[in-house]
Image 1: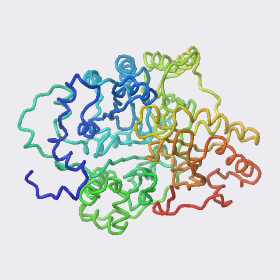
Image 2 (image 1 turned 180 degrees about the horizontal axis):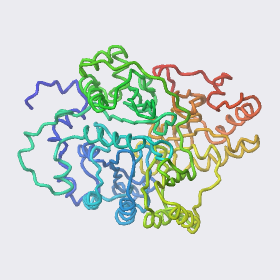
Image 3 (image 1 turned 90 degrees about the vertical axis):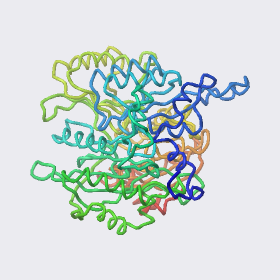
Image 4 (image 1 turned 45 degrees about the horizontal axis):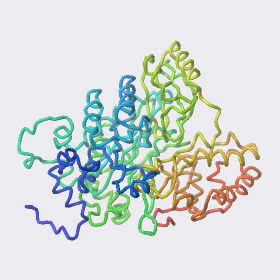
Length: 566
């Protein structure tokens, strides 16, 4: 190593990235090893930059150990698809790949893209090659780089959708790693020159200290939770034109139990940029984080901690140096919700758009419920696209009246016509959790639907079945389902036990607060029952549940992430 770096002061992953030869590692050798279904420890970190996570089926762990077998290893593959827009052909390709190489399901993620689960090591390369054949890739979907750029999802809600999704794509392309490793390992592209002579003009040879997330919203919609992003852009519309974007920095929701120095944080609005400045601003925020982020302790490495350590004023001053100009003052805006509006809407494009609820984001066939088959058949006939939302739902977008009727008929045929669901369920999000996520302490995706049913019973007793309340559950405190912004947040502590958080805002602008620790289902319901009754009897006109619990002092508002309690 030619650089004068004191590696003992840095996290192990920093040396791993440096030694990886620009994200090559020994992945080629790991993939070729027939002895194990896993890849090497070092390569599990490097593979994330290629959109891959190694997992195993924890449901059968004990039996595998009893038989003296290694864990049932498989891989999650995550797509990079800025703005979440897929052609019907791409949907059909993902559907086929899920059957051919994965576990037969598609997971719609909270970052507006697809995940495949259960892909075996021997099928990784073929899966990624076939994705590439349909103009899809997994580059930088994970790892210490900028990840999938999110944007406002619904074209029917704003005539500026096309503009922001194009902006999301441009930011994503600009911030992509430049290494040829992905194309060499997965697509058999030949190494043209000595890879050691490569450079990463933006990231350098150690990339970012941690992951980096960007989202763009068009007020009043906050459908990708702009304040949860490391970097958020809030479109400002004046005289029927996007004149620029408010810039929010330092959002991030991951925490670690038992480490109070880790906490969720909502983004801080630091100014306004014009449309022709947005890529430059994105790049320079990334560079400030690259050069100032914590590379010693990965649990302190996100941009939120960099900003809190530096202070907002110093961070803005540093960003101004990198930009060579000052951001303009923040402009006024209003956000009304962070969920999706369901049903058919006719857009300004005179076409129809159906926002469809997908519980837990899991697309599958189960008994008479054949959502996967329905969407396969719909993809064969639609004259528009399918857009994934940041809330694990989808939009059948831009179809004619004739096709709208065909879509309705197909949904009915396969037993998945849009349901009349409660306001709570339509605002629910659950991470994958067990059995595949190695970080999960408790269930989430497999359990939240049942818990929602039981809470619905309480709501119905008080004629609140239609009341929209944001509820989110994760199997661990890492925050993948953005639970810390929910009006009701549940974080898994151990099998069957959760921390209960209350008081997030309906528009996603405020953190919630710990209400009760380590409680089971019966206790969760018993805690919520009197609060819901009080809400039904004493709420103010139009008041949301999260605002009510704060006003009535069930919890205190968290003003700063640093004050958050686990």
